[in-house]
Image 1 (cartoon, rainbow, N blue to C red):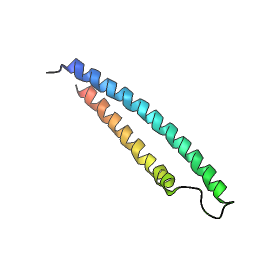
Image 2: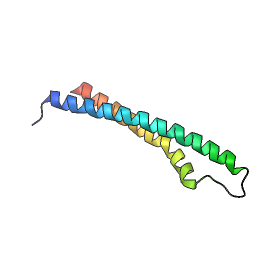
Image 3: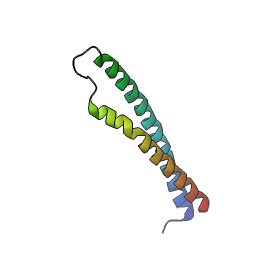
Length: 83
C-alpha cells in the first residue's frame, strides 16, 4: 500500500508531465495556426485549396484538448490539497 507521501509525489510528477505536455500542445497549436494561415494564403493563387481539411479539424480541436488538460491539472491540485 502506498503512503500519502508517495501518492503526493506521484501526483506532482503527473502534474509536471501534464504541464510540459500543455506547453508542447500550445507550441503545436501555434505551429499549426501558422501553417494554416500560410496554406490558406497560398491557396488564393491556386485553382484548388492547398489546405488539407485535417489541418482545419485539428485546429478546431486544440481548444478542447487544452481545456481538458487545464481541468485535469486543477483536479490533481485539489486532490493533492485534500491529501
